[in-house]
Image (tube, rainbow over all chains, first blue to last red; front, side, top):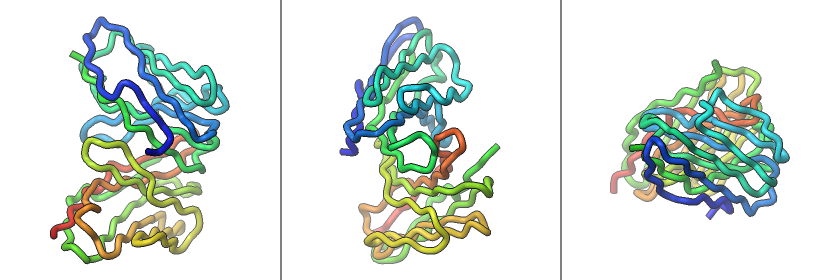
Length: 114
Length: 110
């Protein structure tokens, strides 16, 4: 266990559904991240939150909406997704969001859009 | 576009041998470098970080960094079947994220 938890671990949703992914870190870190991992592609950064402020939105479609109520919790709200959004969604945290700090990943949510 | 390149493999080594994994990166200004291990169906697990030129050893793992050549490597000594996984090279990005390579799949044969 890395100290980063994610729920749910698996999610199947239709294209018209609304769902949310949750991430919680117990490491006392100040930065949290959402990454997407698709087959045959490198991990792709989606969002960065540093001290609860969003510091990066990596050209992610608006059907993905992040929320960071405090430094320990991160959500990813999903609505009207497409089948190509099926992937492993990974949350990570680090001491600060400068890219020079070690990032620790949660177990991920395997999302299938039908 | 900042890139991290890895040979996708698979790299196959016999049990007890040294496995050598290599990575090159495009951003000459990069300062931080990481190796992650990812078992099939699992999330990436940090195994090494390195920030200065030279070698860094941790148990059976040695990370090597050469900033002039923009090259970072991971050596695994006395490879075990349990080391069979995909190894991801990551470089600290200016956006606060990590830029990942596609990973090298390692297979250690008993």
